[in-house]
Image 1 (cartoon, rainbow, N blue to C red):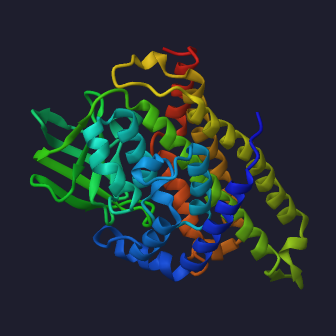
Image 2: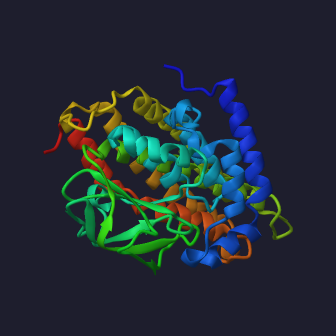
Length: 371
C-alpha cells in the first residue's frame, strides 16, 4: 500500500499552509492566548478555514462537505499543528462529524451536518469517559435531558455545542446556550486550546447511542498528526536559530553537538510520517460500526494503529520539544520567540484523548494481548 500524497493532497496542503502562514502570526497566537475561554477564538481565522472547506472535510457532499477521508483530516491537522493555530478543528471538523455519521439518526444528521459543513457550529468536546480522563464525569440521562458535571471541556472558546462521551455508553450532543447549561473557565497548559468545566441540570441533549470508540480512534490519529506537525515546527525553528545564533565567534550550527541533536530530532520524526499515514488509511478502510454492533466486531488493526500512533507521537513530540528548546538556550523558555506555544501544544496533546500509557494498554487489548 502506498502512503504518498496525491497531487490533490499536495495542492490542498500548500493552500492551507499558505493561509496559515499569512494569518497565524505570533501576535495572533498571543491575542488568542490572552483572550482564553472568555474570547471567541480567532473568528477571522475560522472563517478563512471554512472558506477553504476544512469544517466539511469528512462530511458527505450531500451535506455540503468534501467527502474526504481521515488521511486528509490528518494532513490538515499537521499543518495546523505546525503553525500552532488556535482553531476548533478537532472537535468541529473531526469528532462531531464522525459522531453524527456513525451514531446519529437521520434527523440528527439532517439538523446538524449542514451547520457543521458551513462552520456555523463549533463543537467543544469531553471524551474523558472513554479516553481515561482524570476530571469529573457524572453525566446521566433523565429522559431526554442530561444532568451532571464533566471536565475538561476542550476547545471551549467560541463553542456553540458540546460533544460528550457518557459513562453509561454512547455520546450526547447539546447546544451550550440551552437552559440548564453552565460553563466556567478551567486553567489549562495550552492557552490556545481553552478548557472549561461543564455543569448540566436537566439540559436538553440529543442521544447518540452505540460504540463511541471508533470516534475516539479517529480523534487520536488526527491529534497525533497535530503533535507531529508541532514537533516539526520546533525542529525547523531550532535549525533556523542554530544557523543564526553566534557564540565564540561562529554560528552554533557549526558545533558538532548541535548538529547531532538536530539530526537526531529529524531521524525521530521522519519515520512517523509513514506510520501516521498507515494509521489514517486503516481508519478509512475500517468498516463502519452500526450503533447496535458489538464492539469486538470493530477492525482491531485500525484501533491498534490509532492507539500506537498516538502513543508514539506523544513520545517523539516530547523529546523533540525538549531538545529544540535546549538548542535555543535560555531564549527557548521565553515568550519572546514564541516557542512555548508549540511546547505546550505538544505537552497538552500528550494527555488529551488518553496518554501514551493508556493508549499502549488499549493497543494490547485490541491485539488480544491483554484483557
